[in-house]
Length: 191
Image (cartoon, rainbow, N blue to C red; front, top):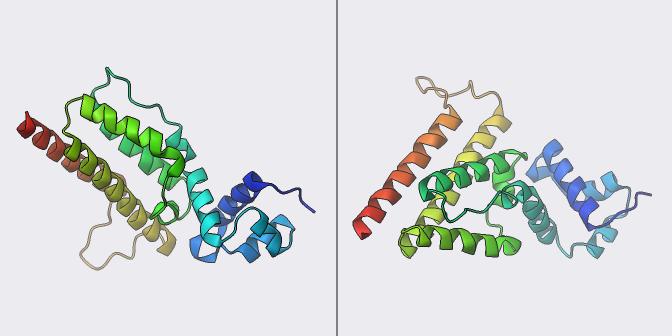
């Protein structure tokens, strides 16, 4: 019997996610993988939703460990780097975007406040800073969701006739530039 604790359960659940995808992750499969009875998982997580939340938090650890902005950082460069870090982290796990979507980063709320404070201190109006962070987050999750869905369906060569194959990174960068350009414009208007 495997020695199990909360961290091992989450780690094995993430490995299972990478192997079989979010739709096939189940507490039954996870228990079998861990060599324990399914009810023993409830010692660590009351529901599958609680397990998925812990998995989402753990999967986001690389982004959560990224350096916070420094007062002398250029907010535009930081905004781009922060959003790119978020995308890279979502792409690290199969179905990373689906796992993250709708999760509440309770342990990351202080970091989010500090990021918002940085933007506001840098001259971005509070409302625009909030909307830019929300828009960038949702755009990133949507972009990664599409990219991962295409990866799961094959090699992407099954695009409808006449439709170009999408270079996901270029498309992401173009959209991110549009978001930043809009924020720069809105910030300049507020001056």
